[in-house]
Image 1: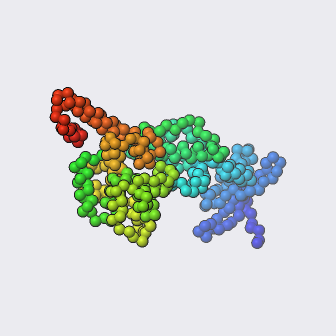
Image 2 (image 1 turned 30 degrees about the vertical axis):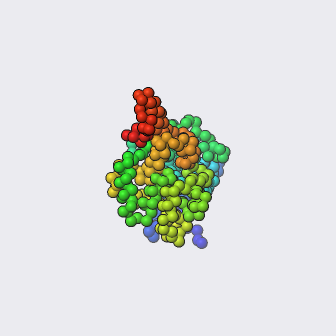
Image 3 (image 1 turned 135 degrees about the horizontal axis):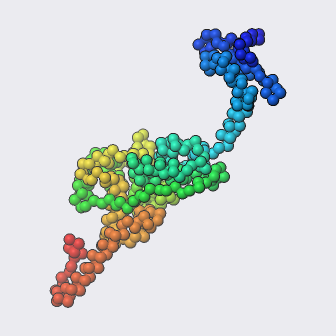
Length: 388
């Protein structure tokens, strides 16, 4: 390939060759020549159109490099290589999240966590290392999110950030945060309930509903207290009609568990049509169901239930409330039936059981009073009458 002719300019040490621009037109490519630290340097300065370079600007570039105010091309390349090496060794929040996922291939709720990370954490902190985070930034994130999101949602976002940074520290990849992430206050004590009229109306609507799974799932929640996800995963092989148990595989509470198959649930499942799918309440194509929100909300609306009543999880609360208010189920048994990991989670229903016990205790007082007043021996005070 022939050497292109170098053309001098009126500026010392500045020359150019004629090349071709991106649009096929002739374009000057400027070079500068100078001596630095006793060494002659000859390097490219830039292109006429692409870099908007003129002989005057090239001359100014040459002067700055002679004075050491601007690095040479060789120094720039060395700096870029060093920066890339540093970047490779920087464990940013984004890189830690990728490593966190690889380290936990069976992570529950990964889709939801991925959305939380991409929507709220990555835009603000993705390119930073944990040591670069400051409390004020995270406080601002919490405050801004609370303006449009529920406290529980904001807490999940901040807990995800804490999980990722803790993972980096435990694996020796990054430094730990120098402060504690402040979580929003979340009240988990909301206990949904239905009065007898609401429950009767709901069951009437379910009987008329033609959706194959919405009504049966709502009844299962009411009869067994099963969570929505547990019903989505429920397969016929998990139902033991002979021994009278339902096996919950990989439930929210952690390890596999089993709950009693009571008569109401047994009758429901025995009458529920089976398909070719292994799932009791299958989704599209017989695969595991992932959603039924629209259908159960239609049933809820038709029954005239409150808007904030959760169609499936609310019925789990109704199940627990009925057992607790009966006064016949202790808190430990209720905890096991609900597969709560901690008794603290079951305590929200304790007041219902206490009220039932108070009423039963008051009945004893009434019986004594009747005896003292010479009441007839065959007169019995009915507990149900007392409740009224």
